[in-house]
Length: 162
Image (cartoon, rainbow, N blue to C red; front, side):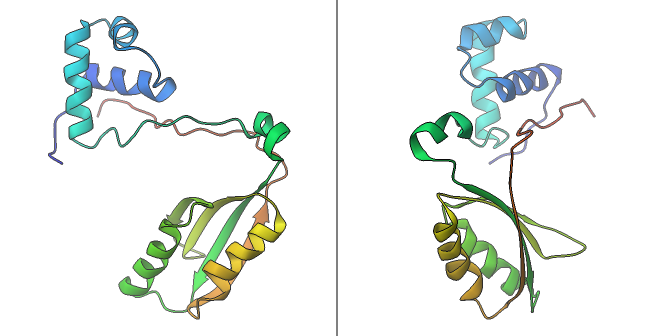
């Protein structure tokens, strides 16, 4: 991925896409006051530079609960015994491939990692804990906070020109 300079038009495009990535190119171009071909070229350039990682659909867990059940969302703090670069990378690699782990942050100070996980129910969370935490001799402490209600969820980054 090559590094690129971005301008105010790119920031407008990125802002619009963060709010609604399903906009047609025509609608997006109109929203940022440019032509459709120019908009398409800019989006392609932003993707190639890695500024747009991927486009996803954000599902509503409350509405899905009618079909799938409410599930269990948790925020998990992990503290390791050893924090060498290799040990930190090994833990990150292990949680990377687990679909129940939605987000993983290396943090400081305090615990070494904070995870956001979602499982179908408590037995599935217990299996995740056994798989990722209890079976790892380097995991010293696990502190889990179970979500009672999702009050806000977003992924939009604030974009302001430098």
